Image 1 (tube, one colour):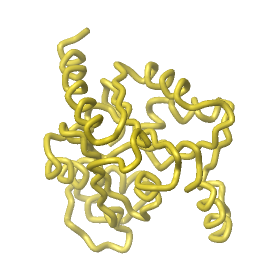
Image 2 (cartoon, helix red, strand yellow):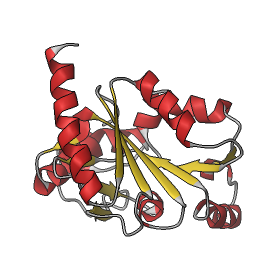
Image 3 (tube, one colour):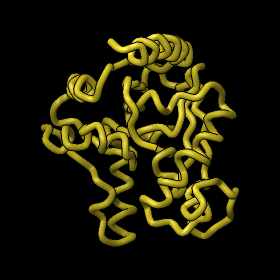
Image 4 (cartoon, helix red, strand yellow):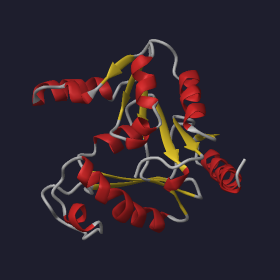
Amino acid sequence: MSFQTESYANTAKTILSNLEKRNMKGYYCENAEEARKLIQSLIPAHATVTWGGSETLVETGIMDTLKQGDYILLDRKEAKTPEESRALYGRIVTADYFLTGTNAITLDGELINVDGMGNRVACLITGPQHVLVVAGMNKVSVTEEDGIRRVRNIAAPPNSIRVGANTPCSKTGVCQDCQSPDCICCQTVITRRSRVKDRITVILIGESYGF
């Protein structure tokens, strides 16, 4: 175990303890392989599973694990028309499991997410029966304010490039607090507590993933 790995594990203990106080369950995995195995143990066969856009889920191989598993997958990208998208979203919000990353998580156990359309944060808030939030330790911020700054200046610029959004931050790498038509920072959600006990499970990974 390296000094950094040991430090991540110590920090994770603090966060997991605070998540419990907020009615959320938490796990710490040293690496992506452990996280994939954990998720396989948490999601039963034949469950209805969906997800929000997340580079973390892709980079950790969790998306591949889902696609190879014995699950009923609901992929919003499969919709070809607005009508199909609306019908599919009706199924998505009643899924058994919703997986997502988080833009930031505080030492005190708060989840901080900024979204464009809002579908990701909507399912985090309500709808799917279980929510699995996967985050590398690079997403940890000291305070809520630090977390929001992280989202705007660290996460939003590369995310804008990823989705092809023509925003100022995609050109400068710095948040301009824009009102661009392509703005991906339209909804800011701070999850300070789960109303339903253990509906939200946070899986921290002792590595860096996503933006």
